[in-house]
Image 1 (cartoon, rainbow, N blue to C red):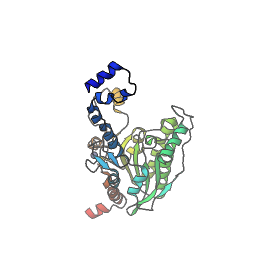
Image 2 (tube, rainbow, N blue to C red; image 1 turned 60 degrees about the vertical axis):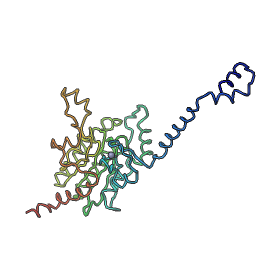
Image 3 (cartoon, rainbow, N blue to C red; image 1 turned 180 degrees about the vertical axis):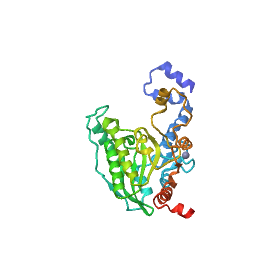
Image 4 (cartoon, helix red, strand yellow; image 1 turned 30 degrees about the horizontal axis):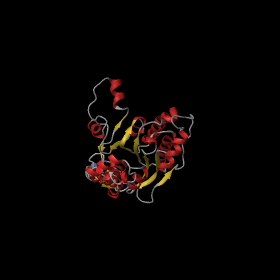
Length: 314
Ligand SMILES: [Zn+2]
């Protein structure tokens, strides 16, 4: 081996030969190492679209299993985000849901332009999510009872509340009042939709005003908070339920921790924006795992509308 390399160097004449000589000179071990990246790429290829890694316990969960378990990790019970349509499907009896205002779409009143214009943002999200805006509303049967149901979707612009979310919810609440129906709103939101400026903030007062009439009619309103429910939504209709439920581990709050710390100049307790902390401090009435939400809603609705339970207890 060594002798052959010397001959080439000393001669320097054979132009065809160098192609043959370098391979023996280079370490064979380098060839042995090469397959490693291949195996890595294989590992990356297999799980796509079939498995999801749980962010809490790092278990690889089979997507089918995750769907069957209502997007809850079977090992550590971590609650993954759920789309509004899936959520409605899991709560309402089949073929009983009548959607309201399905085609209501936001208007770019302010001609808002940031990185992209609000109009193009809306179009993008409408295409990628198949939704018109961040909430679906309608009337359906949950168990034996008809109820007005509004379900927010975080995948549409962070579940932000613009004029469509506010208007659809206000109309839902008004329908519930008119038809004497109990109301359930399942929230998830990053807050008000800044692209609509003042118009998004007005929705807080509008939805709460409609809720006040619903309450005057002595009809129950159940608010379900899911991860995350924050800012303008938490500061309006999400926090004024007759009964406020939350999913385990949900982040619930108004402003982010940094803003609160700077404003109050106080040390914040650990985990102060979680459902568990807020249950301990009385803001939330119960933490209900996703699979139990439907039976619990049925139970609470029957308790609040018929008063069956106290009658049995008496
Ligand atoms: Zn997990």
